[in-house]
Length: 489
Image 1 (cartoon, rainbow, N blue to C red):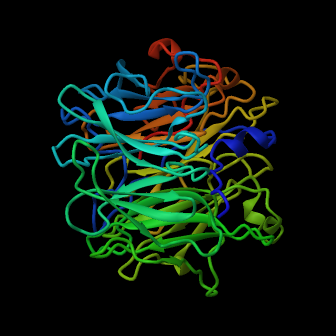
Image 2: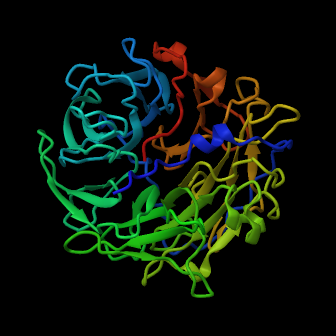
């Protein structure tokens, strides 16, 4: 079977040239009223590794050098507090850290993916780390999943959860959810192109029932994976994005509905015309419209032959799909790009609008805002400097009206926009101060020639109160680390 292709979150961002446009800052929309269900289902808001009630944030540096091994990778954490996330509480985790499985080796890409979930049901969130480049014996790029356990003192100790076979790249895509409705968190990943589900609860030795579900028969190339209760039945569903590997370059979005035995078969989401929605490469699940169902947003990057029939893909686009009692409501899909009314900037080749996505309620109105990374955005003549756009949530889904855009040249944002920073290459929301409203974290994996850096925005009013930190704070090797490639979700 052909090896599964890795996602394009960073690869395309580095390869594609950017057009020239700036990201102005717009006022936010007035709060809509009357959501049926005010809680916003957003991965990350409840990540609490030390159990103090404040949200914590984990982030990746898969290219980092560890003990002389280039590309070994590390995961980092900053902890929340009454005043929000504090970089002074940083923690760096590598495969050479005490109690962590494995050993740091060149090309392991430890932290290829990060997912947070309480696997052993002890009340502390655990961090699951994918290492897509892990070698197992002579099996190159087998990939592996490991867990770092949460506790009162934070993350410490761990166990191996799953190891792949040659070229299977286990951990390249990863998500967590309660797929069978038994109250325990499960994990889903791919081994080659077959969906593998590890069924909880997990023991501290890492033991769990591993089941291969939905064996691939179409030679799919899986690009992203996420989970949420799309149909409101109390069981999480698996949402996957794939490329079919054929000349027609069709990218599709499929949902495997949760059930008593775990996820069922993948079913393609169709639009108003009955044909499959033309999907993309990047995915976020959360509650945008305030009802009782999780929604999802797909980011699609340009660069395929089929773009000729889809002018909205210029510079990148996002597609919002609401959930409903019968599952994903593809007929109600809504497409937004930088030419949509109210969205900062303009749709131009190479912008990479939709390279990163996150969903959460930032203002307490019951609707989830959508953060959209635009890492290919040029600022003046500075190519690929990058930016981030925040789209307000409404009962009808995300809207450009009242949206906000900012970048490293926005007032009060620390730093200076430079060529190739790729600011917006990653985005996440976290409630670091326990006020019920999400703060935004942004990664710029290209900062300083690929060293990477991170920003935290407590307010969606441009750069007010924002701060940045990187390798100097973390005490890590900076060269080509790509810090801020992704966050936990």
